[in-house]
Amino acid sequence: MWKVMIVEDEVFVRESVKELIRWEEMNFTLVAEAGDGLEALELMKKEPPDLVITDIMMPGMDGVELLKEARKAGMTSKFVMLTCMGDFEHMRQAMEYGASNYILKLSMSVNDLRETLSKINKELTLAKPLPDKAHVRNSGVTSERNISHPELNKILTYIEQNYDKDISVKSLARYVMMGENYVSALFKKKMGTTLIHYLHEVRVNQAIRYLLETELTIHEVGMKVGFVNDNYFIKIFKRCTGTTPSQYRQNLK
Image (cartoon, rainbow, N blue to C red; front, top):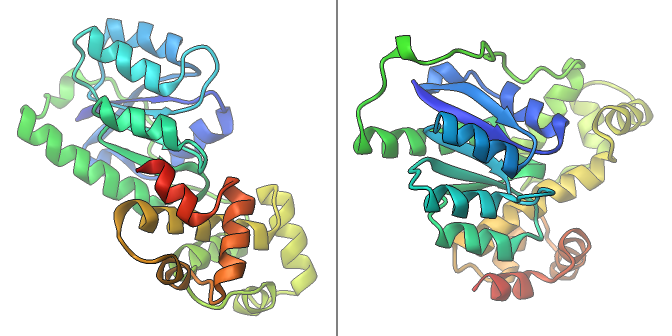
């Protein structure tokens, strides 16, 4: 199996990535983790992993510097960058140094990670034969994402799959057959943000993908992610990223 290192200074995010999917089903095994780039680089020198999943912004040595230092040392590990919405300059640098992909942290889902790992698996398989399983340390981390409240899990899954549709607290409460006030309080307690703010973040993150990967107009992007009003889309996008959709696209170019 391909060896994976996770580098992330936020313990909660690191644990979330580890527990999001069944890694071994994707031909990967988690062999190491680090809280910053300096710690990760020392571990990589001892045993280079096949894949490094790293946050871009970290204290000490960030993900881009870690990628640069790894390349200087002759390491060929694949890199996937975990990024927030305003990290476009770091994202551009990472891609220049050969990062294979990026994942937006706020809207990271099982599908995002599975698609990325499938892509990396193909790249690694073409580059070299798969290592013998007996020589790979097994961390034992194979559990699926486990949110303690089943109704909350249903809501998150529904938003992930239907962010482009007309969604409200009322419609989601009806979907899980619970009261609106209870759903709002539960979501805030478990997720640390309001349900509507979370929905906006998911939609904006998906909008960023369209801005990066397509030539769709701003109006078309807004419609695809569930904003029927252009001005409202631009307002929410700017609130989340600090810039308008057109400025964001221009900065990346």
